[in-house]
Length: 383
Image 1 (spheres, rainbow, N blue to C red):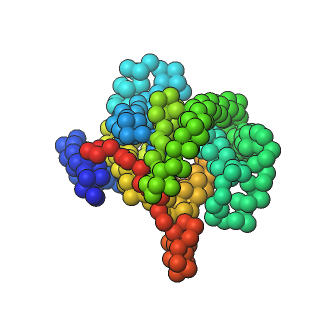
Image 2: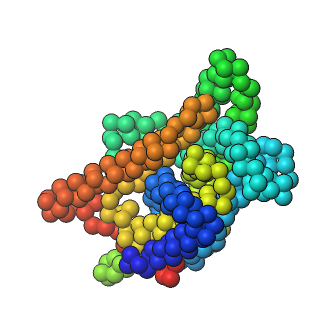
Image 3: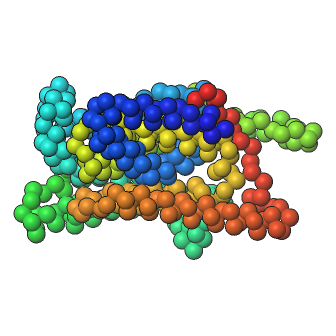
C-alpha cells in the first residue's frame, strides 16, 4: 500500500535530488532536500483538507486532480507563480522576469519580497474564509473543541457573518499592520494593495465555493430521489451505493481544490527565499514536497482516515485558520516558517490523538457513534 501510494513521490524525489546534484553539486542537493521537508511540513494540513473534498468526487475527477492537478501545483505554483509575481510587481515581461531570476537572483528575491503584502492578504483572506465557514456551520453534528465550536455554530444562523468578520480582519490588517511601516519606519504605505488583494481573495473564495456548492446541492437533490432505493437496499441487507460528485459539481470542486492548494503554497514559496535565491532549486524542492502532499491525500482517502478519526478534519481547519491569520500578520512582521509548520502539525496531531482516545472509549463501551469507519471511497489505482 505504501509503495503503491507513494511510489511516484519516491521516484520524483530521486530524480529531483539527482537533478539538483548535477545542477549545483552537493550544496544544491542539500538545499533541495531541506526545501522538500519544509514544503511537506507546511502542507500536511493541506493534504488533510484535500482528502476531505477529494473523497466526495468520483474516480475520474479524482484522477484528474491527481494528474493534471499536480502539474498545476508543481509547475504553476512552485515555478511559474514566483515569475508572475516578479512580472506584476516589477512590470516586466515574462522573458525579462525569467532572465532576472536566472541572472540577478538578489534583485529577483527583493521583488518577490516586495510583493509579499499582496500575496499574504490574498491567501490569508481565502484561508480565513474556509475556517470561518467551517466554524459557523450550524449543520455540523461533530464538535472537537465544544466550548468554542458550539457557540460559534449558533452564530452561523446569521447570514454573511463570516464575510463581515473577514472584512473586519482585512481592515485591521490594512490600517494597523500595513501603515505601521509609514508611521514608525518611513516606508511606503501599502494598505491599498493589501485591501485590493484581500478583497480579491475573498471574492475568489465566494465564487469558487459558491459554484461548487450550487452543483453539489444538485447532486444532493438527485440523492433524495434515490433515497427509497437506498432504503430498500438497506432492508435487504445490502450496503447502499455511495454517490460521488461528477460533471460540473466535480469540476468546480476541482477548481476549489486548486485554489486551496495555491493558497497553501504561498508561505512555502515565500519561505523558500529564506533558504536560497535560485529559482531552479526552489522549483525542485517545492515540487518534491508537492508530490508528497498529493500522495498523502491519496493515502488518507484510501485508508478512510478522515472517517475513522472524526476530529482530524477539525484539526486541519484550525490549522487553516492559524495559517490565514499568520499570513495576515506577515504583512508587517516576519513569522518563522518553522513556527508556521509546527502550529499546523501540532493542531492536526492533537486532533488525531483525541480521535484515537474517542475511538478507544467508544470501543470500550461496545461500539456506537464514530466507532465504525465509513466505507472507503474509491481512489483510482496507479496514481
